[in-house]
Length: 399
Image (cartoon, one colour):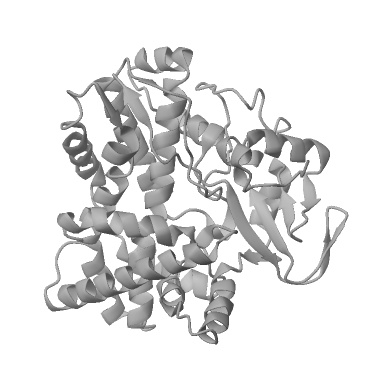
């Protein structure tokens, strides 16, 4: 049996036994693919904060792939253009410049009212149903609807862009097939065309939205960004928090539906989804399972000789179930104290949108549980074949 087999159907369905086996037998493991797989909490946290390890090489890998396939008369340049300013894929100093630009452009509007309105808009059509697919009707629509309104994307476009986002987010998946590259490139073209036109519109007639803010700030900046960079930033803002929030909402509704004790605990609380509860749910089954890093130089780490350009796969979800860090890690304890989970990463690349992900989770899950306090789910789930961001394809809910 392979210790590291992330594409196995059994491990896609439930990767946690594989993680536990690795933590126990080889917490720093050289896989048959040549990558280093790191599963323990202390090592994952340390590497996330260690500047000898730079952000994953997916941007370089895509660019090399574009060059290779160009010689085969296959054009995947749209993917490279779309991801050129994704902050999770780039390193300092460019990373700092783009991150500061986004944070300055993103005025923290009062988004709670917006999220609440979106939640009610999505729950209203399903509240009288006997059963529904929570992914299709609720969890996949809420983050896309929210970010669309914040960016200034017309509401009638958000479903189309949501579907394209599901393809392009696979860029962070360490294992991509040729078929997936074709679909990703198609999605990238769709995003580039859409945001090029939207940026042009917002340049002519600015409004009170994030894309207009990005255009305004770029005009005033001493370090003006190119049109391609602005488009890439807009694509990143649309999809970065979308798939992760879909995953977290879906898996949390699943986990609560399968745990009657937990459901009873939550329904009895006035503040069912407090920050402490959200943190515990993120620790137990957070959306991002795998992150990539690259060794910047040759050095020794943990008794192993790491070579320049070695690939390191960090298992965040495994670190969050490490028994050396968390008591009873495979249980949900909503009163857990000092929960320093790694669901949003650590260090330079700490998640930019953690605050809005938390707000959507708190408001969305509270409304869902209040509306459907007696809902049930089946544990027969088909999962998307992307272990980087793990989520169910559908989630049938019975009322």
